[in-house]
Length: 235
Image (cartoon, rainbow, N blue to C red; front, side):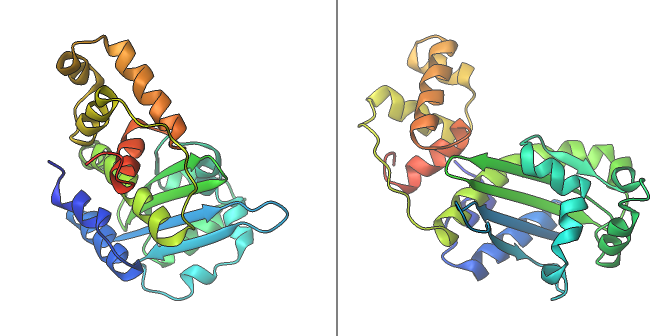
C-alpha cells in the first residue's frame, strides 16, 4: 500500500492542493521549502515553465533568466537525472558566487534536486531546500534521498496531469503478467521479488517493465506504473 504522502500528491486536483502536498512532504522530511518545475520544450518557440513552490517571495519567480543559465545546479538538472546534493561547494567559483548570495537571501543555503527528462520535450525538477549546511548532514541526506526520489516520481505524474495537455497514447492491451508486474511495482516490490511472484527470471521482468515504460513514454518502471494507474490500465 502506498504511503499517505504519495497517495496525497497523486490525488491533488489543482495547483493549490499540489502545493499543499509537496510542502507537507518536504517539511515532514525536515526541509523548510520546496519547489517544482515542469518544463515543456516547444519546436520553434520558447520553452514553457510552470513553477510551484512555497518560498513565499514573489521576487523568486521573477529572477532574471541569466542567473539560471549560469547556475551550476540548474545546468546539472537540465541534462542529468542523477540527484544532486548541493551547497556552498557548488558555488565556490567567483563566476557564480553572486548566485549563491541571491539564493541564501531566500533561505536556500543547501538542498537536494532531482530531475527527470521524458519523451516529447517534457521535463520535471523537484527540489527541497534548507537554511543549514546539508552537505555536512550526511545522515539526513541518506534518510531523505530514497523518499525524495520516490515522491518525485509521484509528483511528476501529478504535475503532468494538472499542467500539461492530455497525451495521445496508443498502447496494446497488457497481458495479465504485465499487469501484475506493474501492480507489484506500484506496491514497491523489487524486480527480484516480482520475478519470484511470477515464477520467471528477473531479467525477463526487467525487459517487460522496460518495454512498458517505453510504450508509455516514461523513464522508469515506477513512473510507468503510476501512469498506468492514472490511465486505468491497471487498478
